[in-house]
Image (cartoon, rainbow, N blue to C red; front, side, top):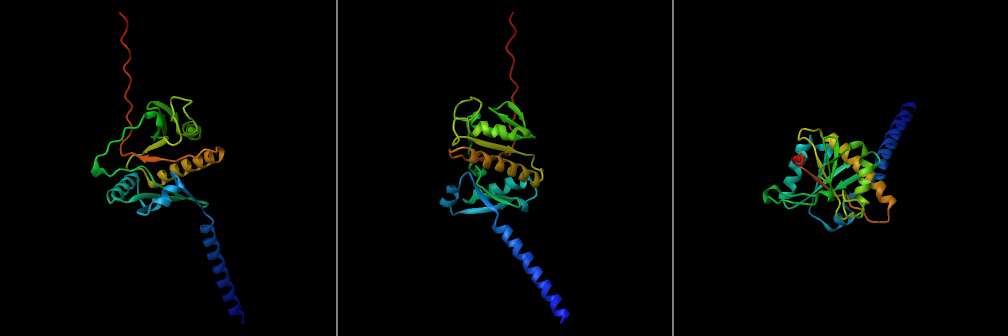
Amino acid sequence: MKVHYISFLIILTLFSCNHKNKKSVLEQEVYYYPDKEKFEMKTNRSNIFLDSINNYGDLLERIDKVACNDSLPIINYSTKKERFELLPWYECSEYEIISSPTFRSRIFIQNDSILTNFDIKHSIDSLNIILRRHLLNKGKDFNYSDSPRQAGLEVYFDKYTNAKQVKNLLVEISKEFNELSKMTPDTLYLKILFRDRPLKLIPQIPPPKPN
Protein backbone atom coordinates (compact mmCIF):
# COMPACT_ATOMS: atom_id res chain seq x y z
CA MET A 1 0.00 0.00 0.00
CA LYS A 2 2.85 2.34 0.90
CA VAL A 3 4.59 1.68 -2.44
CA HIS A 4 1.41 2.59 -4.35
CA TYR A 5 1.05 5.77 -2.31
CA ILE A 6 4.63 6.87 -3.09
CA SER A 7 4.12 6.11 -6.79
CA PHE A 8 0.97 8.19 -6.78
CA LEU A 9 2.85 11.14 -5.22
CA ILE A 10 5.62 10.90 -7.84
CA ILE A 11 3.10 10.88 -10.71
CA LEU A 12 1.22 13.80 -9.16
CA THR A 13 4.45 15.80 -8.79
CA LEU A 14 5.49 15.15 -12.40
CA PHE A 15 2.04 16.13 -13.66
CA SER A 16 2.15 19.32 -11.61
CA CYS A 17 5.59 20.30 -12.96
CA ASN A 18 4.51 19.60 -16.53
CA HIS A 19 1.35 21.65 -16.03
CA LYS A 20 3.37 24.57 -14.64
CA ASN A 21 5.77 24.47 -17.60
CA LYS A 22 2.89 24.50 -20.07
CA LYS A 23 1.23 27.31 -18.17
CA SER A 24 4.39 29.44 -18.22
CA VAL A 25 4.70 28.99 -21.98
CA LEU A 26 1.05 29.88 -22.52
CA GLU A 27 1.42 32.98 -20.35
CA GLN A 28 4.25 34.42 -22.46
CA GLU A 29 3.17 37.72 -23.95
CA VAL A 30 3.78 37.86 -27.70
CA TYR A 31 4.99 40.97 -29.54
CA TYR A 32 5.09 41.42 -33.30
CA TYR A 33 7.39 43.84 -35.16
CA PRO A 34 7.23 46.12 -37.05
CA ASP A 35 3.51 45.78 -36.19
CA LYS A 36 0.94 43.01 -35.83
CA GLU A 37 -0.88 43.89 -39.07
CA LYS A 38 2.17 42.84 -41.09
CA PHE A 39 1.79 39.31 -39.73
CA GLU A 40 -1.98 39.10 -40.21
CA MET A 41 -1.67 40.02 -43.89
CA LYS A 42 1.15 37.60 -44.78
CA THR A 43 1.05 33.81 -45.11
CA ASN A 44 4.38 32.88 -46.74
CA ARG A 45 6.36 33.13 -43.51
CA SER A 46 9.49 31.20 -42.59
CA ASN A 47 10.64 31.17 -38.96
CA ILE A 48 14.26 31.70 -37.93
CA PHE A 49 14.91 30.94 -34.26
CA LEU A 50 17.87 32.79 -32.77
CA ASP A 51 18.44 30.01 -30.25
CA SER A 52 19.05 27.56 -33.10
CA ILE A 53 21.77 29.50 -34.95
CA ASN A 54 25.46 29.89 -34.18
CA ASN A 55 26.42 33.45 -34.98
CA TYR A 56 25.52 36.66 -36.78
CA GLY A 57 26.85 35.41 -40.12
CA ASP A 58 24.54 32.40 -39.84
CA LEU A 59 21.60 34.75 -39.23
CA LEU A 60 22.40 36.78 -42.35
CA GLU A 61 22.63 33.61 -44.45
CA ARG A 62 19.28 32.33 -43.14
CA ILE A 63 17.55 35.66 -43.86
CA ASP A 64 18.97 35.77 -47.38
CA LYS A 65 18.02 32.15 -48.13
CA VAL A 66 14.42 32.74 -47.03
CA ALA A 67 14.19 36.04 -48.93
CA CYS A 68 15.53 34.49 -52.15
CA ASN A 69 12.85 31.77 -51.86
CA ASP A 70 10.18 34.50 -51.96
CA SER A 71 9.26 33.96 -48.31
CA LEU A 72 9.24 36.27 -45.31
CA PRO A 73 12.03 35.75 -42.75
CA ILE A 74 10.56 35.94 -39.23
CA ILE A 75 13.17 36.27 -36.47
CA ASN A 76 12.01 34.54 -33.27
CA TYR A 77 13.54 35.23 -29.84
CA SER A 78 12.18 35.12 -26.32
CA THR A 79 12.62 35.55 -22.58
CA LYS A 80 10.83 33.65 -19.81
CA LYS A 81 7.94 36.10 -19.89
CA GLU A 82 7.91 37.37 -23.47
CA ARG A 83 8.11 36.10 -27.01
CA PHE A 84 9.09 38.31 -29.94
CA GLU A 85 8.57 37.88 -33.67
CA LEU A 86 10.38 40.31 -35.95
CA LEU A 87 9.94 40.76 -39.68
CA PRO A 88 13.12 42.66 -40.59
CA TRP A 89 13.84 44.72 -43.65
CA TYR A 90 15.29 42.21 -46.05
CA GLU A 91 16.62 41.97 -49.59
CA CYS A 92 17.56 38.89 -51.60
CA SER A 93 21.24 39.19 -52.54
CA GLU A 94 20.48 37.86 -56.04
CA TYR A 95 18.50 40.98 -56.92
CA GLU A 96 21.28 43.48 -56.06
CA ILE A 97 18.82 46.02 -54.71
CA ILE A 98 20.48 49.09 -53.24
CA SER A 99 18.50 51.17 -50.76
CA SER A 100 19.48 54.75 -50.02
CA PRO A 101 17.53 56.08 -47.05
CA THR A 102 18.27 59.47 -45.58
CA PHE A 103 20.75 59.01 -42.74
CA ARG A 104 18.64 60.81 -40.20
CA SER A 105 15.78 58.34 -40.74
CA ARG A 106 18.07 55.58 -39.43
CA ILE A 107 20.05 54.95 -36.30
CA PHE A 108 22.99 52.58 -36.68
CA ILE A 109 24.08 50.16 -33.96
CA GLN A 110 27.52 48.61 -34.33
CA ASN A 111 30.62 47.91 -32.22
CA ASP A 112 28.80 48.76 -28.97
CA SER A 113 28.03 52.24 -30.30
CA ILE A 114 25.03 54.05 -31.74
CA LEU A 115 25.39 56.43 -34.68
CA THR A 116 22.78 59.07 -35.48
CA ASN A 117 22.66 61.14 -38.67
CA PHE A 118 25.63 59.14 -39.97
CA ASP A 119 28.43 60.47 -37.79
CA ILE A 120 27.16 61.44 -34.32
CA LYS A 121 28.41 58.73 -31.97
CA HIS A 122 26.69 57.65 -28.73
CA SER A 123 27.34 54.94 -26.14
CA ILE A 124 25.17 51.82 -26.37
CA ASP A 125 24.15 52.59 -22.77
CA SER A 126 22.10 55.51 -24.10
CA LEU A 127 19.90 53.22 -26.21
CA ASN A 128 16.65 54.17 -24.44
CA ILE A 129 17.34 57.91 -24.84
CA ILE A 130 18.29 57.60 -28.52
CA LEU A 131 15.27 55.40 -29.34
CA ARG A 132 12.96 57.90 -27.69
CA ARG A 133 14.43 60.82 -29.63
CA HIS A 134 14.32 58.84 -32.87
CA LEU A 135 10.80 57.43 -32.68
CA LEU A 136 9.09 60.40 -31.01
CA ASN A 137 10.98 63.15 -32.83
CA LYS A 138 8.29 64.26 -35.33
CA GLY A 139 10.67 66.62 -37.13
CA LYS A 140 11.81 68.53 -34.04
CA ASP A 141 15.49 67.53 -34.22
CA PHE A 142 17.24 67.39 -37.60
CA ASN A 143 19.44 64.50 -36.41
CA TYR A 144 16.48 62.12 -36.07
CA SER A 145 13.63 60.81 -38.19
CA ASP A 146 10.74 63.06 -39.23
CA SER A 147 8.08 60.49 -38.31
CA PRO A 148 7.70 57.10 -36.58
CA ARG A 149 6.70 55.51 -39.89
CA GLN A 150 10.01 56.49 -41.51
CA ALA A 151 12.19 55.70 -38.50
CA GLY A 152 14.33 52.58 -38.60
CA LEU A 153 17.36 50.86 -37.09
CA GLU A 154 20.30 49.24 -38.83
CA VAL A 155 22.28 46.69 -36.82
CA TYR A 156 25.71 45.27 -37.55
CA PHE A 157 27.86 42.67 -35.81
CA ASP A 158 31.00 40.87 -36.91
CA LYS A 159 29.85 37.66 -38.62
CA TYR A 160 31.44 35.50 -35.91
CA THR A 161 29.58 37.24 -33.08
CA ASN A 162 27.71 34.68 -30.99
CA ALA A 163 23.96 34.56 -31.62
CA LYS A 164 23.34 35.04 -27.89
CA GLN A 165 24.87 38.51 -28.08
CA VAL A 166 22.62 39.36 -31.02
CA LYS A 167 19.61 38.08 -29.11
CA ASN A 168 20.50 40.13 -26.03
CA LEU A 169 20.58 43.32 -28.09
CA LEU A 170 17.27 42.53 -29.81
CA VAL A 171 15.59 41.80 -26.47
CA GLU A 172 16.88 45.10 -25.08
CA ILE A 173 15.69 47.03 -28.16
CA SER A 174 12.30 45.31 -28.03
CA LYS A 175 11.76 46.09 -24.36
CA GLU A 176 12.72 49.75 -24.79
CA PHE A 177 10.43 49.98 -27.81
CA ASN A 178 7.52 48.43 -25.89
CA GLU A 179 7.94 50.95 -23.08
CA LEU A 180 7.89 53.82 -25.58
CA SER A 181 4.76 52.41 -27.21
CA LYS A 182 2.98 52.51 -23.85
CA MET A 183 3.95 56.15 -23.35
CA THR A 184 2.49 57.57 -26.56
CA PRO A 185 -0.93 57.43 -28.26
CA ASP A 186 0.83 57.32 -31.64
CA THR A 187 1.47 54.06 -33.46
CA LEU A 188 5.17 53.19 -33.42
CA TYR A 189 6.97 50.73 -35.68
CA LEU A 190 10.09 48.72 -34.90
CA LYS A 191 11.88 48.34 -38.23
CA ILE A 192 15.29 46.69 -38.23
CA LEU A 193 17.77 45.96 -41.01
CA PHE A 194 20.60 43.51 -40.32
CA ARG A 195 23.64 44.85 -42.18
CA ASP A 196 26.26 42.62 -43.78
CA ARG A 197 28.97 45.27 -43.47
CA PRO A 198 29.69 48.08 -41.03
CA LEU A 199 28.82 51.67 -41.69
CA LYS A 200 32.13 53.36 -42.41
CA LEU A 201 32.58 56.87 -41.17
CA ILE A 202 34.30 59.11 -43.69
CA PRO A 203 36.45 61.66 -41.89
CA GLN A 204 35.56 65.19 -42.80
CA ILE A 205 38.21 67.13 -44.67
CA PRO A 206 39.06 70.28 -42.75
CA PRO A 207 38.62 73.53 -44.66
CA PRO A 208 41.77 74.98 -46.19
CA LYS A 209 43.70 77.37 -44.04
CA PRO A 210 43.37 80.99 -45.05
CA ASN A 211 46.37 82.48 -46.77
